[in-house]
Image 1 (cartoon, rainbow, N blue to C red):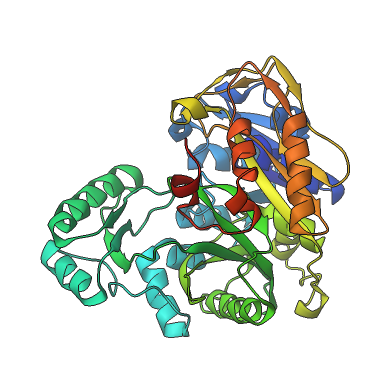
Image 2 (cartoon, one colour):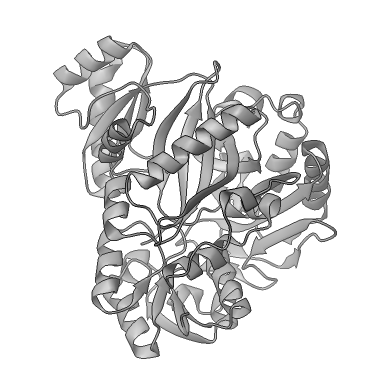
Length: 447
């Protein structure tokens, strides 16, 4: 097992990894930018190293600074968390070249699944269903028109190297397609450094269903049930739950089997997520794989009792999975609400500032993953996430009521937050009935 792990991240996920390290008897090293000097992950780690100024490009994305911090502190492994460099194959490769272990999959797996067009082709070869669309990159607008005519409108144009809704356009007619492809290419180039785009059939009112998988270096691989991440705003998840009201046991097992096939196709080890779209006819299609721990991983932990971060660390150290597929049992229901420092009344504009009052909720089966505290300044340079509330119940109704109670208890002053928005969603009759889909907020919640 590792003696010391450097966490190449910040905020709540860095703190989450530090806690796992402490329980496993592993020393932790926090890295931080000048803007994060007073952050909780810095105060909580066994060691901490400043790696640059506030701008991510000069700190959390500066590979040489992170490697230097690991070498200076004697860390024998690096955990990337999520975001930043977590799905950067070059970063993983450089770490391994330095004789340090990357706590994640192989660089080849990150590369293959990080390029969505390559991932799509890989899944087709593996026999995993994909959304009808282009065979790889769409090279010119003439070809785009041909593909759209073949698969039928509406279509969606997506950045091949993208994520988070950037470089993505829904098109309903040929008249808008050429402009949408050009716009998506420009946006993708600015956001990801690649203008490559591909096309898929746009599924109306789909659900976003993802399967958590764990694989070790000995060929063992399991899935830990599904998460329903259909409540999204601008293609960003805001509420997640596990399991999903849309799946019966036979469909769950079939999708789980496909998730394992998808992971096996790239020789995957570590924690990862296979993401599907499920249409109104209960047909499902692979859309992408996230080769890292997810923001919403706690809901899976709550219903399975399995610590995903500890499993990640153990897998990277060469250990076998601690569980087999037969050992995994789903109990109850869990819901997660992401609490951001944003003003819902002003189109969710980020609201950085000093938190003058901070009283998190408590009570049975309420979990708060956060690195915030009273007096902490929410920086303007990074994601506006303050923390996540996760509740568990014996059934979905109890999990919702417990979340409503927890949201009502949460006291955050000094900055605007998305708590009122979450309360509105949870009070919605359609949400309570489980009638949700990826454009639920646009259709059912007035912003």
